[in-house]
Image (cartoon, rainbow, N blue to C red; front, side, top):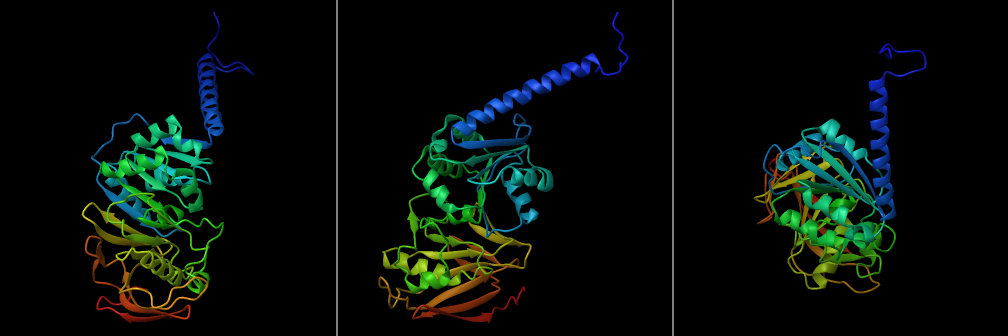
Length: 351
């Protein structure tokens, strides 16, 4: 009879079986990932995909301006997804956000990641099934032009709208937030336009705005912007608003979010801010049409109302009322130059 003692240079028979099983599973996963790469995407997962979702899903929007995650906000998102199965969508990078959500934030049964490298992947049956089964979805940062080119008008595009219509949460950061509005800056010119450039020619080719992409509740008359204060994007969001209003979208408003900051909106349309940086969400509401908006000429636009939304504030996206704003200001653009006249609201400054 063969001894069960470990012999020099040999493994226990049970260990050999486990090793063989591990190699087989690794091989299967490698084959699956190879198939994914051939179809224009990468796939990662962590956690128990077969676990029962502990709670019910709720409608919610998590709107993040980029930078490091406020974990409290993502714990809020996990709860809105019933602490179930989450999906991260991206067009660059790998599984780092997946690991952060599962291991550092916690409170979710599993996390999967799909990294898109082609438009064909947005029609792949395996991809669509993964999206269909997700309890919550988060769209990562990167280049929003890839999301527009890869997803707009595809079966994946329709599934994202269906996910939200089914009462499930969705969020996005940086490029992922940029595409959540009813109007979006698509960055389709191959760059990221600055405030100075946009204000100098708001009808120019660099102002690449996209309509009819995603259909998020409370955001159909909103255009978002990200990294808002750190990259001085107040001017370019005003330029976007000027162009949209000039094109007939008379009710559109702007919503900017600072880095390390999240505007978390519940199913009733009430939003609150989480932040690592003492950042804000910024609501921009034009009071009328631009005074001058002509091709090749700088913008003139007066009396754009700007409201700062901080951690003590609440915004109702149904009415655009802001309770306890951090500040109220008026933005004037003259000959393409922005002047922001800011006053402190009764709630007091928060940074």
